[in-house]
Every structure is written in C-alpha cells, then in structure tokens.
Image 1 (tube, one colour):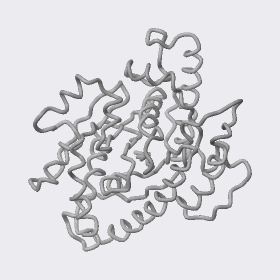
Image 2: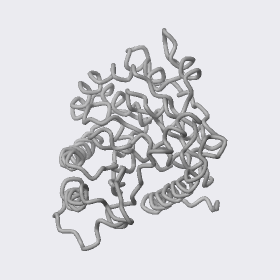
Image 3: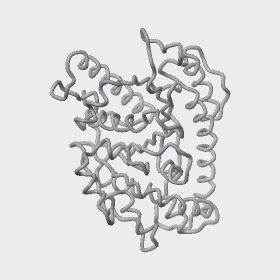
Length: 333
C-alpha cells in the first residue's frame, strides 16, 4: 500500500482540495483509496461529508468514529489504539474522519518524540499511532493507496503524520509565502527522517510493526496559478521561476542549479493545477469533485468546458503520482 502525505507549512495553497480531488480521481480510475484526515481543522472531512453526517460523527460527548476516537485509549493511558471507523465516500473511496480534538494530542506527541531515542516503549507506541491506525484500516479496506491530509505547520501532530507516509507531495503557490514555506519545510523534513532512522534501531517493541519513515519527496504541484495564453501572468512569473531551485535546495538538500524548462511539468514539478474558481462553490454544494459536476449541479455553458479541463488536470496528476510512487496501474480507462 502506497501512502502519500500532502504537506506544506504555508496554508491556503489548496492542499485539502488537492487531496480530496485526487482521492476521487483515483477512485474513478479504479483504485481503492483511503483518505486520512490528520489535520485538526478537519477540512477534508468537511469537504467530503455533509453537515448532518458530521454532526453524527462529532456528538457532544465522545467521538468513537473519528481518528481521535481510535487513538484516544492510547493517549488516555487506558490501552492501545482501536480499530478505526472507515467512512464510505463512494464505492472505491473511504475516509478516516478528522476531529478538532486531535489538537489535544500535540503535547503528548511532542513529549514522546525525544524519548524514542531513549528506547522507551510508550514513546514508540505514541509516535507510531497514526501509522498503525492507517495500516490496519488500509488492510481492512484493501486500499491500494492512502492519501494523508495534514495541517499547515511543523508541529508534533504533523511529524507523526509524516512518519506514516512513504511519500510526500508538496503543493505550492507561485508567491513569496510558498517559497518561505519550502525553505522551512525541507530542512525539518530531513531532520525528522534522520531522527526517526536513529530511533527506529532502538525500539524495544517485539512483534509490533513500525513505520520506516521514508517520507520520500516525489515533487511539488503548482497550485492556483494565474495564466494568460498558457503562461503564468507577470505578477507570479518571478516567484514561479524560483520554485524549482528552492525546492531542490531546501527539500532535496541539493544544489540550486536547475535545467532550462524546469518550470514546466516534469522533473521536480509534478504538474500544475489551475484554480477553477467558478467550479469550487458548485462542487461544495453538490458534495462532489469539480471534475464530476453536471448541468443539474449548475455547471452549464462554459462551466462544462472547465469541468472537462479539470478532469484532464487531475487525471494527469493521478497518473504522474502513480508513476513516481510506482503505484500499480489498475488498468481502468
């Protein structure tokens, strides 16, 4: 099972929308997909489910059918993780439901992280909780790919979520803030990977599988770019041109030298996704991805052209990510 985290510590780049639409596209292409909402803001769950269902999943007392409910016995000191509730979205796409209460786990995850280097059993159980939860749910659901949504920060919850990922995709926007996000993200990601490598060898757990913590960056997706005649508008062009070098230096830890044409899809840039501003409100109302909108959903006239373009964009992204992660192609058209 391939697990892919979508991570940028700069918010507002369209990360959650990317995860949701890519999950639905993989479902359309014949894959069984598990999406895990590990962002305490729970935006992925809000996008995927209607308010009536969310109210059932988030009652006033305990939340046994969310990710928080599944890990609560471990963090509460009364046991280990429970089996996670798997919420169906479509026939081939399911969700591990997020929870605002996940924010309560930050301190415990932060405290236990350095204790892994001391070889403490509880530290490994806590740090690996998300991974073990996802692995068990993915096995039960027979998922071929798991997409992990995380919040826009470098905190302990995200560190535990990233350790659960075999691969990492970085959504970026062509602006100064995304460049700064890359500069912060890259060194921290490499540090987390190295610290976990050292800790892994000291695990006292016998018969308990632990994540490898590969967190392999497979590239970035350029989000919400403005174009005119297929080229970025002048306002974004200078930031767009700097992303490949900053990504290579900060995320990959290599020199900034990039080849001509590196701002086009290929190389470290996986692809570009346009900002389909007129489609997103329709998609939110219809509780479906933008590329599946129909005239009955309000996507009439020129909107249908955008729907088709959107489908092409996300299919291209799905195929590119599958190649980079060696995700087995399902053979569906």
